[in-house]
Amino acid sequence: MQLQTVRPNIVQAIRAYRVSDLMQAAQEQGQHFLYVDLAKAQTKQEVLEGIAAAFLFPPHFGKNLDALYDCMTDLVHKAGPQPGFVVVLEQIPDNPRFDREAREQLLDVFRDAADFWGERRIAFRCFYSFAVARAQDKPWERPAEPAPVAKAPPRVVSKNGVNPNFGMNMPMMSSAFDTAMWRNAA
Image 1 (cartoon, rainbow, N blue to C red):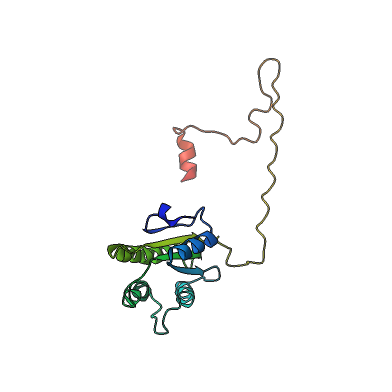
Image 2 (cartoon, rainbow, N blue to C red):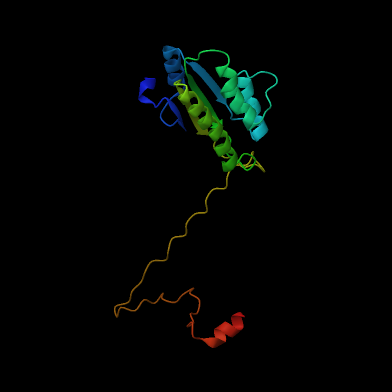
């Protein structure tokens, strides 16, 4: 895989890219490869802890989005010239405790980091995937099988064109102008 085919400062879904190919491409380009699998994380705190551990953040990491941004930008920038970054955030949680808003806030930090490095003409490519949502109450239960669809009775039409099944199991219809129906409904 050639990184030249991917914009240099972008945050995008991993889609057709394989993690192993991204890692190899980063190595060939001499860029940092940062990878985290967040499959076990369920909350914002767990996501931040997972990223901090995988990316080897300093022990004083504040475990909030501002601290994440600082570690991805200023802290690294002050360490000296950087060759570029390939970041993979795999299986970002998708559950009520880490909802869409939390995911977008996390990705915004990486978008801001891509802008930061872009201003310094250093490639920062971030790829992500979302975890498949799981039932939280009873994860050991399998989802119920869908109920079988009942087949409609065969359509019978008599020789004179009248359908003898017409009106079966159908509620009585009334006109919108039927005042008795409206009084009974109220």
